[in-house]
Structure formats: C-alpha cells, structure tokens
Image (cartoon, rainbow, N blue to C red; front, top):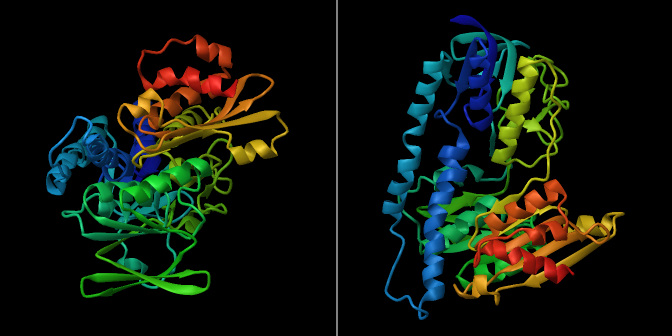
Length: 453
C-alpha cells in the first residue's frame, strides 16, 4: 500500500505522541509508526515502572534502618507480587495509546520503519510519503562488539523478570546498573557491579558518589572499579563475565548479566537513504530548530536528536514542544534548554543540577564550593539514614546558587527546589524568605544556605 501524509512520526513515546496529536489537531494528515508496543519506553519499560519497583526497595531500606528503633518483624519483597503490581501501571498503555490515536484520526502502523528516500518511509509492504518526517525513536542499549554480548539482558528485560535470580552481574556502573542493583540487593539477590571507570554514576558529584558506594557496600553490593568487561559466556545456567583490571584478567559468575554499559540513539532506520546525517554521538545532526541539517523535511526529538541536553524524559517533552511549533508555524522556535536536574533512583537517591565542582574550578566566575555530610540532621536522623550529604556551588559575589548536588532519601524533591532557584536566579536572601512546611526536607534549604554563609 502507498499513502501520502502531511507528517509521518516514527516513535510513540513522549516526543512522538505529542507531535502526532498536535499536528492532527491542527488539521494535518498524520501517520505514526512503532516497532514495539505503542506508548514508548518511559511509561512501559523505563522511568515509571522502575519507580514503582524502587518504591519497594526504599521501603525495605526503611525497615532495615529502623529495626530496633520501633520496627520489628520479618518482611521481604515478594517479587512476583511486586511485578504483578507493576503491570497494573503498564499493561493497558499500548491498547489505550493506539485507541487514542485512532479516535483522533491518526493512522497507526506497526513494524520497523526504514527510509526509502528523503520523503518516503517503508514499513513492511507499506510505503508512506510524508511532506515532513519526525524521528522520535528514543534510545537502545549501545552495541559494544563484545564476545557474547547477546547473552546480556537489557533494562526492559529486567523490568519483566518473573523471578529474582540469586546472583546478578551488572556490566557497567551507570544509571541502569546502579538503580537496578540497589533494587535487586533489597529484593535478596547477591549483586556485583563491574565498572570500567574510577567510580560509578560518573555524571554525578564524586564526593556524593563515594558516599553512595560505601552505603551500597554496607547493604551487600560488590562494586568492582577500573574493571573493564571483555566477554560474556554461558555454561549451563551459569554466566561468566571476563574482565580486565590493571592488565590482569578477572572472572565473575552469576545467574544473569545485565547490560548497563550505555545507551545510544535508536536509529536503525536507514538514515542514509533519507539523506539524514548523524552526529558524533550517533543522533540525528540537527540545527537549532531540531531540523535535520542535511534533509530539511526531517525533524528529530528526544534521544534521537543530537543536542547538548541529556537523554531524559523532560527533554523529550521540551523537544516535542519546539518541533510542533516549527512544523506548524515554520522554523519559529529555536530549542533552548534551561538547567536540567537529574536523579538516579538508587537507595538513597542522588540528584544533580547546574554547575559541577569541576566546572566551577574552571569558571572565570568567583565561585564557592560548600560540601557537608548531613546524616545527623533531624530530617535524616529520624529515619536513621546512613548516607546523606549536599554540595552547593554558589556565586560568591551575587549570592546565587549555580549548582546543587544532593544525596539522600529526599534528593529527588530537594533538587527540584534548587533547579527553580537556579532558573530564576534567586538570591540566598530570596530563598531564605520562602517559608517551607516544617519539619520537611525542604525546610533544610535555609540551613544549607547558612552553611554557605
């Protein structure tokens, strides 16, 4: 079948869904294509289901910390029940998403989209021609060329595990590995993280990560640093990971190996046939309007676009807003990214926004770095939290916050307050005038700023 459209959207996640719906509501003819289940990664195989599962891990951590301080009794995570609960959030998404598109009059296609020409997309036997094409295909585990890498499971596989294995090996020490490793450890698994760098979670503040590593070890996790994964083998039901450290070979065995060695833009769509150039990181090379520099009829959003922003869900939303305006009103909205907070949902959580200490050292601004461990503050002491700290990067002349880095059970909420302060360039005085409910984690912000003064 051959059919023409005003716009073809590839991908049904955050960026693709919003773009398709907005264009249809504006009167355009729209086709949307998905190679997997409709609804995208975040809601089905990423952020949302992960947060559901992590909630149980956090509760277990509370229980362990408070045993002998008011809590008693045996409690464990029932993995099958937890997974069944998780599915109540994800199972209805594909059907509901596709139903919503069809009710709007959007044509839905299933299969792998491939460029056939600058304006044509092939899905199986169907050839679609679009005046405009939007690539919103997200990301996928990076292909490493390691021997046996096909034996590793990916993050979406982990989120569908029917049973928790006795021992799991995590290859890499980024978001995926560290978040799932903390979850697995609280669910009773023996966990080993094999990471090639000096510390895991390299995007976050080194001092806070070091504290998190100590806490991880306290709950039984083994973290092997400067240890580079070279191959994976399977013998019967046992997996063996061979790695290299300081020129020597090391081997690790487990019941499962999880790929946590990075993700890359998912662009197995024959971009060259569409005259779509890719950037150094493998994303679509776009201009400030998120328009392909080599094919002006193509736009990209979210993880598929090569921009300065991190690959986070809020960025996909920001990108889709810009792409919608640029499609409907010509290139009228250059993309701009404010400071972007990020959180790793380990137990405890770690969050970051704005300038890092390393960036501050290189800056021409007169900056001040304030670091404090705060597990003895009331907010954390009342639940016997073992690891809590903050680091603030401030402008010594203007009295404003340039960067904030937080470790603790409330890091995800606290980092958003600092994101707002940085975005609005609030001074310490402005922030201290804000009255927060007490006793809450936010009410500690004034005390943090006092540490700076």
